[in-house]
Image (cartoon, rainbow, N blue to C red):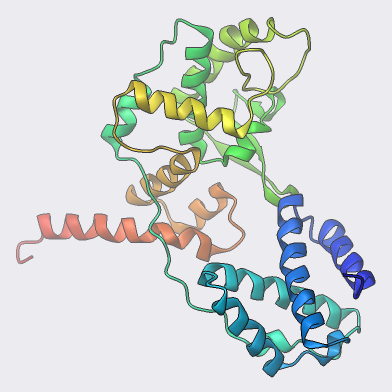
Length: 300
């Protein structure tokens, strides 16, 4: 639709330049705003300043009539609130009507995580006498050791790893960077892979690159490739669970909290902008503490 082209363009530039938003984030903002523009066109609203609380309620009713989840509606509202905050700042509108609209309460899903026994089986399944086995072991160790996202793991370069300090520089969402430490097991697996298996894999490609994790042809692994590797490891370990790279991130956070790490530290290690994102893991800590209490307190 041709209306509001300039406003949309200015907002996109704001997200790119001032907010350092990732292309993925910008895509969702644009999609949410576009659906709102389509609604305004259908309602005959030709000025963004005409939108008020009543218009927003009609918009929300339509969203729920489409059987959209509360999570999706909440995301749309959040996108539009940010959009109108920008419009207000640029004096395109005089007020932000989305400020008075509360986000729908969402059921917070309990993140899936692996128990220590399940992890141990995965750690012993790779044949580390082969280049691919060394790679798989290093991949598993670093994902669990750092809790990084699969998109961050894909971008990892040799220069990002500091073996002398035992830290890795992770390039996160929105161009944010963070240093995360890793332990002895991850270090040994990474060193073995980088010094041996990775060189063997790289020889299969006629190109040079500094990406840490390579596929069987010597090219950088894709997120789908990482998921496939984990699926095969689970199959080889004869586990009856479905494991994703993100589940290792959940496991990383859950195990740290269960062992006494504070929430703020885990937030920083995960690269979460808001503490509320990290708090989804506290349910496991509460269960863990309850079990300790019930098993230890004399009058439990």
